[in-house]
Structures are given as C-alpha cells and as structure tokens.
Length: 238
Length: 112
Image (cartoon, rainbow over all chains, first blue to last red; front, side):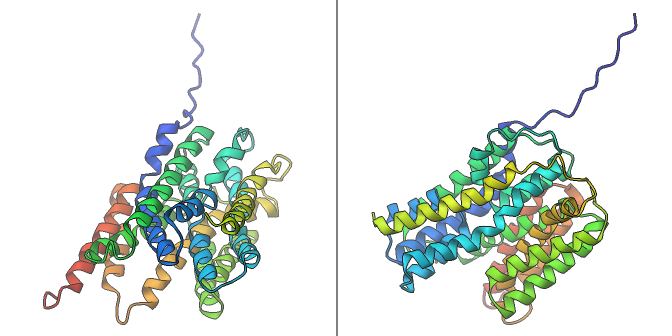
C-alpha cells in the first residue's frame, strides 16, 4: 500500500514567536513611555497616577494628550470625550487584521488580546501575515503582552527618574526617538506591493495636508480613511 | 490617587478596548471577497502604517531648520538594511542606531 502523503500546513506561530516579534515594538515603546512618565510627573501627577494611565488607557498619543488637557484645565468629562474620539481609529484594526488572516480564524479570546491591539502591534501582526505567517491568538498574546509590559515599565521608570533623565545623552535620546518611525517604515516595506502604492501615496499626502491645516489627530484620521478609500477603486491585493 | 482622573482613565480605557475588541466580532464570512468592504479593509492596513510613518516623521521634519541629515541617513539605513536582510527587527535597529550616530556627529561642534 502506498502511503498517502499528508499535507503539512505552515504551523501557527507560538506565544514565544509573538514575544520575539514584539522586540522592536518594545525598544520603541520604552523610551516613549519613559518620556510619558517624565512628562506626567512634570504635569503634577504622582508616579502611581502616571502608571495607572498607562495600565488602564494604554494608548500613547491619547495619554500625552490627556496630560495636555489636564494641564490646560479641561474638565475631565471633556478630556474623556476628546480622548475617546482620538482612539476611534482603532475600530478599523480588528476587521483589517482578520480580513487578512482568513475567514476561519479563531477569535474566541479576542476580548483579551484585542486590548493590546495598538498601532504598532496591529502593524507588526499585519506585516507577519503579509509575509505568509498564519494567524494565531497565542502569537497575538505574545506580541500584545510584551508590548504592554514594555509600555508600563517605561512609564514607571520615567516617573521614577523624573525630568531631565536623558538630558546628558541627547544622541541616545534622538536614536531612541527614531525607533518608532524606523519600525513603521520597516513594516511598510514588509507589506509593500505595487497595488498598494496609490493607497500609501494618498495616505501620506492627506496626512501631511490635514496635519498642517488642522492637527496631527485629524491628519492621522484623514490619512487612514483616504488611503483605505483609494482601495475601493482597485482589485483586492494579497 | 485622584478619583476623577481614575474615572476618566477607566472611561477612556473601556472605550478604547471596545474600539479594539468589538469589531473583531464582526462576521466577515458573508462578505464577498471582492466586495467594497473587503477592498476597503484590505487597504486599511497599508494606509494606516503609511499614515503612522508620515505622522511620526513630520515633527522631525518641521522641527529641523535645514536639511535633516540624521533623518535622511536613518531612513536610508532602514531601506538599505531591509533590502539586504528582509528583517523588520534588524532594519528598525539599524535605522535607530544610524539616526543616533549621525545626530551625535552633527551635534558635535567642529566635527562636521
């Protein structure tokens, strides 16, 4: 009897693979979270309050905006609505990721791993899928948890160190500050295809235009939506 | 701990979690693979990453008086390393190190 060859599908990535995949995110998060911790204590928050914001909100730009709003004396209700509006862009990430992952993926624990679906985690997960990796919730947990812990640790160290901790090392501060732009560019290269170029160009131009006209928040929203709308006029690219 | 700050953080945190988790429960199985929603979602990822890249370098471009040599070298290092290694991790680290080194060289008076 001839043995029937069995198919060996690509294995689903593990929790550990997610932890390793989160290394560049963590390297980028640590200095930014550190800066947030420093800024929060400068704004008059205690170290515990700074860490609480990172633990509970876990959205970098929104947290910095929260500080600005609190310093300006905005009422907490107004601040809350502003920050919620700022984070609404995240509604696109889950469906975009799962659309790429395929129709039959298990999302039973999405209530937990989706908490960590930040801009960078989304970009890294999407890049991995675009490079042929399969979707797995364990990978998402590894990716999200590592990034989350980096964010909290960075905040705590920044709040503990206080203002001016990196003042003596401007080149180190600059290099760390370029970590996230470098990560976004590398992720962009990893998912780049000819069909995506119009999407990327329109997103970039609209981001610059709306940032200059209105604000960076509107720029980000306009860039994402306009780029995605360009996709309506082309075939689905895989 | 300021109770008002805690309540605000919990409200924002819950809403953000809802934005991230809620849409993962949308049933995509009935969606035509070449339909308008599929095309929109397939373009959302590249559009989002391109947007975040542009938004992250824009303050660097705006805050620099002349040509931003560290930024130029940093971007070139990411592109060069990715072309060579196809590794997101290595490219990110290479760009960051190159940016920091060039920043250090440019910032030293009389060195450049």
